[in-house]
Length: 594
Image (cartoon, rainbow, N blue to C red; front, side, top):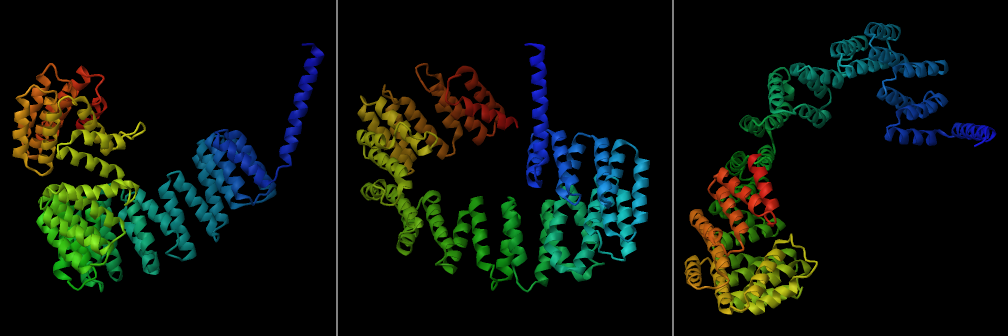
């Protein structure tokens, strides 16, 4: 390129730059702030600071521009540039904030003595201006000069003769210094002046309870204030109880709630709140105690019946089903028309069916829901469960009629796959494996979600039938064992399995896996493990990885022998690198080892 051409290019670039600069000069406040914000988000703090500064220079009262410029200069630690910018602003307008921030920047540069002198001068010259104390105190707090900040705020109280001034700032300082006695006094003084501040003040106390040890210290400080602030006893105890919960001191929290109950006109309210909190935090023993106290002491309380429901759920979760059913029964009678009562009836049916295996009793609860709430989602759920009762009772035709309705989507799409899966199993129970395969084929599509357990189970049964079509008699017996398990006739199922294992059929591994399922239901893990060891020892078996994984689960969960479980999971990783259980085994190893 010729020298003259280079000159023309440089002139062109210079001219375009001047034009761009001229264009930005014409930008209004909104456009400048938008550009500044974009630069700041990209981390281009110098450019952002310059644009923010332009906003502020155009209008010194523009706080957004000023604070943006300060933020960006500070991000770059360009304190000299910030001071220069503020001094330019001072030529247009004098402002306390500018003087305070210049001292702040000087402090950050390392000259603390000069900074403190400047702040003191501001206070001396503005003794009657609240903003001076506020700005300097806040600056000192940010710099962790807590004692000096405290002195500034306390000086303001003396000057303006107002004890409620800067409560939140001083409380934050005391909390930071772990002087919780003084922090508590600050907030309680404010609460004495304005009872409407209770929720806010409680939230402030709780915000400092990040660790149980700190929460316990704050609780101790609050207890000391019960006597000096007698008029605030109930609010203090309420805050104290919640803090004790955070501190995991449920016994002491319950004591506070019991005191509050004595003073309350609405009996049961405090205990019920405590019980619900305890239940959510897996403190079932305390939740149960609180619910029971309401039931025993306040039978006329509005919280009496809800407490019975809460108590029933706890018994249910803990496996104490007799007590759960008793409490559910009382609740359902008291609130016969409520949606909760419907759910309780369904749950009672499920307990009788799945826990006590009393299908006939379970049916009565499902039929109540069907009769009283037709057309609801509870109605559909009850109908589906009613079909299970008929299966258990051996009335496969009645069950099939119910599930055909669901399969035809008469009760909505969501029941289609579970209904089809149940119909396929009914075919197996009847000794009709090929009809079962046809049903399974209709529900399994190329785009089926294999993470869906129903689809996954259906695909597994479909493959078993397909791969063993030549041995239809063994498939019939396989279906009979499935039906025996469904009806909990485990002895019959094991007898059939033993007869099949004497034969040389292709389903022997699947029969062994059914035996494993039965022994797990009978809570006989050692017998289950022996069956799985037989599969692993069989050189012709294709299911070594599956058997190893199930063994590992038994050692981990039923026998609590974690080292043996890890060894088996590791065996899967080493011997069967292409196994579908690889990721599951890795996860279990990680979880066990923490």
